[in-house]
Amino acid sequence: MNGLAREMLARSRRGEGFQFFHYLVNLRQVPSAKRISWPRRRQRISGRYAAGGFYPCHQFVGETDFLLGNVEEGITRPDLQATFAACNVYRREECRDCFARLYCGGGCTANAYHATGDVNGVYALGCQLHRKRIECAVMLQVAAATAR
Figure 1 (cartoon, rainbow, N blue to C red):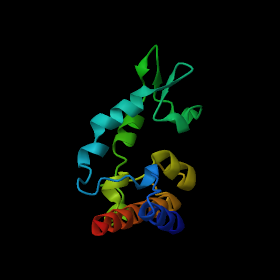
Figure 2: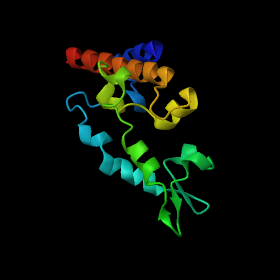
Figure 3: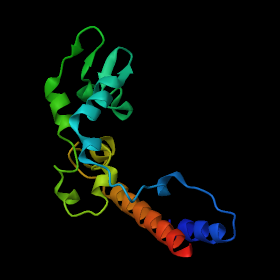
């Protein structure tokens, strides 16, 4: 990622700049805690529908342990719904001192589960990648600001 950021900077200086979605970070406005709060999560939990069933996200579709309910009965696993509602950056010890925590919101719960076997786990490689993206975004924005 460092190589990509350096190449982006070099091309920008030559007037041939391009954008990379993962480096488009608004550093002047830190995301609020609302980004990862329950009301927004609820949309994800009740919004993934597959073959009549509701799942926390598309990565859990077909895994019966994560079936939240179905079209006919609605949510039949409020316990599972509450488990996913509690998965956030404030509940993960590993996130407590991370400078990028409010930009990732604690990471992807499905990735955490598939890597660790626990929805409250932490997908370490995902954390490293996200922190590196934020570092590169900061470097590019500082370079752009000092070039003016």
